Image: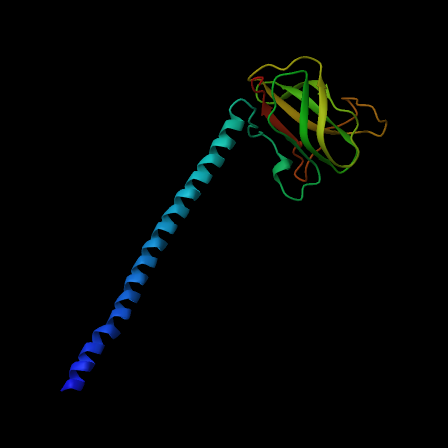
Length: 187
């Protein structure tokens, strides 16, 4: 009988470590939930901050509007493309990127009821390939809210722009390669 009493006395000490293990598991599980919660809150804060930075950067800058004709700058693998971004008031336009299969120019056109109108700016002759930050001088200052067009023209071989002989660049479907954009407020 004494042995049974000794075994009984020993049994509670054996159960106690198992109870502690369960408590530790619950405690770790609680910490895991808190870690998940903090991770999700952190992710939401980071995404919110990124959205704020992106939307703040667009507040006073131009937003390219869709072109009524082909906009090759959005087509991967294009042979000819033009992209203007974040344009503000001034007497120059900075064209972010130009891709030409043959030497040519970037022309800036006024808007004529939703279509490219009079040429108000001409770039220097650009070689075949990619050019970035191409500056185009305008014949007049742009106006806030004005719609303009950046259009590619091929050089006829003489190295000087001539609106009659240096024709607009077209894509495979014979659409003129250009991008229209709206002039934003000065910063």
